[in-house]
Each structure stands twice: as structure tokens, then as C-alpha cells.
Amino acid sequence: MRRLWLSLGTALFFGLFLGGCTAQLAQADRDLLNQALAASKSAATSAERAEAAADRAEDWARSADRSAAQARQSAAEAKKAFEMGLTK
Image (cartoon, rainbow, N blue to C red; front, side, top):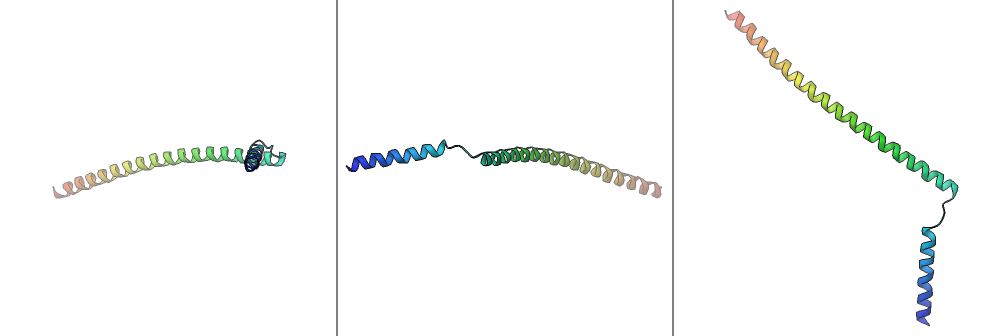
């Protein structure tokens, strides 16, 4: 008898479990799920665009740093040449 109740309980458990897995969503829930999926895709696209913009900004910053270093070097050379001209 115990084995029968255990078998029935197990069958009932798996029946409820499988029934829950295959249950249909209400239309409102389906709409909300679709909206969430669309928002997720939009957020992923926005994140990719933001990352690309950040990469471009980093490239521009490195370029500006190189230009500033060249300007400092040119200024130092000009200062040295000017001082050499004064000592002559």
C-alpha cells in the first residue's frame, strides 16, 4: 500500500511539474514578456554604441596626448633656440 501511495504521489508531482512547464501565459503576461525582451535588446544595442563611443574617445584622448607631447617638445626646442640666439 505504501508503494502505491508513493507511486501516486510521484506521478502527481511530475504531472504538476510538467503541467507548470507547459502552461500557457495570459495575453497580458505575454505582452509584458515581449516588452521586456524588446527593452533588453534595445539596452544591449545602446550598450554596444556607448562602448564604441568610449573607444573612440579613448583614441582621441591618446591622439591629443601625443599632440601635446609634440607641442611641449617643439616649445622646448624653440625656447632653447631663442636662448642660443640671445647668447650670440
